[in-house]
Image 1 (spheres, rainbow, N blue to C red):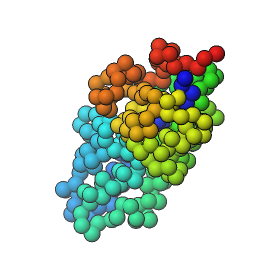
Image 2: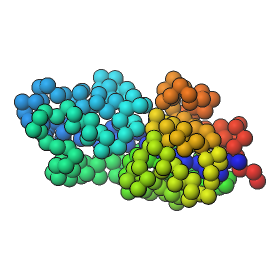
Image 3: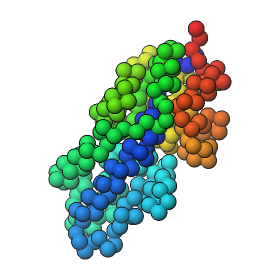
Amino acid sequence: MIQSLVFDKDGVILDLVGTWFPVVEELVDYTLARMPAVSRDTVTRTDLLAAVGVEEATGHIDPMGLFAMGSFTDIRAAWQRLMPPGGVDLQTDEQYHAESKRLVRELAHGNTVPKGDVVTPLRALAESGFRLALLTNDSEDSARQSLDELGIRSLFNPIVGADSGHGGKPEPHGLLHCLSVHGADPSQALMIGDTGADFGAAVNARVADFICIADDPQYRPHQDVKVGNVIPGLAELPDLLARHGYLPRS
């Protein structure tokens, strides 16, 4: 019997583009501004976006790219590889970090965009007896604030970020920690996500199944994700769980 539902945040509960794309665009522009003027002709905005899996011309986001499945630390590391020798160190420069954090606070916090109606299905699942947890490669504080803004933080325990001490996805340790808090073993749990990192965590933790949030099965992050487990949003999740016989017994 399934007891635990472990959710990714961005792209599942939050609209990834609506919430975070304005932030990444500003960070790209700020990163370019910190580069020596002589390098700005060789490294472009398009280059920095492409390095994290975003195609500037079309707006297409690679579900296996860093924008979709990485942390800001991963994004900075990708951009660092494009920096000229002797340029700013994006991982250690205090001014860069301070301004980046300010941009995130200013642009993301207070501007959380849900991915459709997420409140109704999540409340229904909690009321039906499932234990809900959140597992994200974002920071724990950022995740808590986003859930607060949607009014659903109380539905989730635990809330685990990449900085919570269990590592990031696709490693299984954060997911296994969630199950430990729930008193469940992997055979009693599902992972609900949208990226290769989420699917990898589900596989590595050996949970019972993986539910993929994607607008179309062709956008699922791995060919091993079952086509029948792909839904466009959480509004469809209760019906999918019922079809699979995963609803808790009354």
